[in-house]
Structures are given as structure tokens and as C-alpha cells.
Length: 95
Ligand SMILES: [Zn+2]
Ligand SMILES: [Zn+2]
Image (cartoon, rainbow, N blue to C red):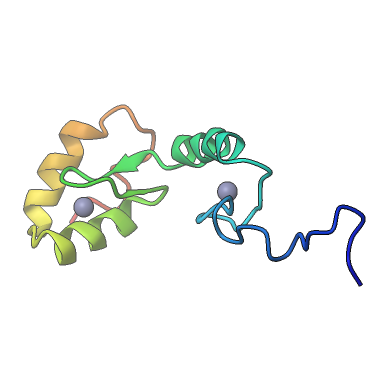
């Protein structure tokens, strides 16, 4: 069965306006881009070397250690400088 306008919504540019973070589908890329900013706001921990962002410090640590071959001490030093304003960032850094 064909829709009233003669196009299949499921076929229309699938993935093009789909949020890679949460899978929400938007009518246009402009709206999607605005939506993506909300995710960026959640993800306070940005990688020092690339565009990678995450909401979890330990996830960023794993990323940096694997992807950029940082040491834990090196990560800790960089994170202390970069995220000193982020509440709770030093939880788990002791020891
Ligand atoms: Zn999303
Ligand atoms: Zn990175």
C-alpha cells in the first residue's frame, strides 16, 4: 500500500537524519544537528586529541588509553587540568 503522497517514509533517506547517539529520526538535518547539541551537552568529557566525547570519565579514560596510547598517569594529569570544573570528576582517581 502506497501512502497518500506516493512515497514510502521508511525508505526516505534512512539514516541520513537519524541521530547516531539515540536513534531518533528527524525531519531534516538542521533539526538533527540542533538535537545533537543536546547530546554534546551531556557529554562533558571531551577527548584531548580527537572529537570523541562521552558522559563518563572512565569511558574517556579507556578511549585515551587504547586509542591514543596514553598512560593512566598521563590521562589523570590531563583530566585534572581539563575537567577541574566538572563535579565528581576526581572520584576514583585516588589510588
Ligand atoms: Zn539523539
Ligand atoms: Zn580521542
